[in-house]
Image (cartoon, rainbow, N blue to C red):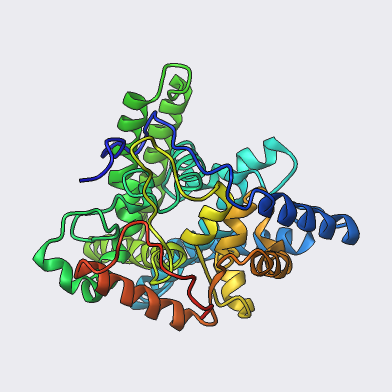
Length: 383
């Protein structure tokens, strides 16, 4: 039996309480050292010229790939392939630009962050709901069953050790990688609508979406479908099954890219699934909780860092979401050194393949009911 505070609602009102006694000096110390780094180097914590150049490059790539599709000049098979590339660029927009902007880390200007964050609406999702679901819920209650909405996925996937164990779950380490490509289709066409209903019901009047948010939500959904599906159907010279197939293929590529990046950050063998006691108390303070529930991967791979928006430095992102991801490689050395000094975990995999292997093994073990809640085993050695 689990504590009474566990519910199926992702927009919960009750507050969990993180420990105030465990290593209280860790986060102030690592935060001071990171701030010293920026003071000594004179760098801004927001986007620098490299980040601005990267943003322009990704947006131009997004427009060019869509323009090539809409030109109607490509052979059908090449247009279909281009749709997949366009889906990948849509994932890059989300991972690299809108993610930072919605966290407020892209710019010191709230206006810049707001408009860049709305690019998420252009690629089909909703920035308001992402801010609630991701910034407020996931970043606070990371990997806490019943509280972290990222664990609330189709029941065919057993991502949390508190979920009912079904016979089919023992095979999820194989079929999960065929489910992940559905992530963006599910997000845009199902989960956003479900979450809009939930956030309206669960949050108090002062916090609930405004009328303008409702208008923006539906207006951008209509815009997205009009531009990326209806217009190609009306303009392109290809048979409609190929156009619809290309739209779906684009989402399969986008969905897999988004899903695999986020799964490798929290659902691997090493990460923990803490549960509160009957009073809502958690064992760790917030910062140390992030260390136990988060993992890095491919930190020495500049291509992965470029493509994944620095989210292969997930530990740094969870501790310092207000810092632009372009700085994560530099501050990661500070975070890792400080964690070691405080005898705290810093889970990291040298390669993407190593992280995928750890995720595969997690899915395999959790599918057999072998992953435990609130593990208190010794700190694993960094991979």
